[in-house]
Length: 146
Image (cartoon, rainbow, N blue to C red; front, side, top):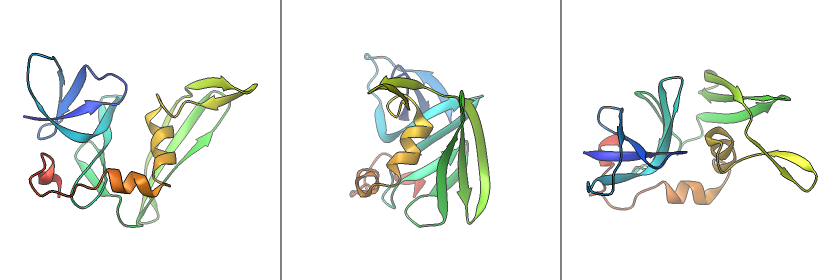
């Protein structure tokens, strides 16, 4: 079994072949993929590292992020965010959720540490995101997503 960890709760994971969520324990030795997922309204959404670069998934829909066919961003409102993911110019996912905020320097900021969508929309703008989520060995646990 090859596991991808939950973004906010490292005691949970999903089996990457079935998307079934499981409880992780220290007693069981599992092989982990580089990446994270969240469970949003019973949908598994995440990022996984592959030899071809980062792969965004929404359940069993896979989107390679190494090319420029995608865009993701957040539209902010007073108490909620809307995360947009588009592919080839078409919005595929529009996800509305309550904002995770913290106070910094007298103003409220989105929490990019605990908010998967805020983290992702910021991370995809950085070269090191692509380097980190690109595997350089063919024998990696997550090669089946290639």
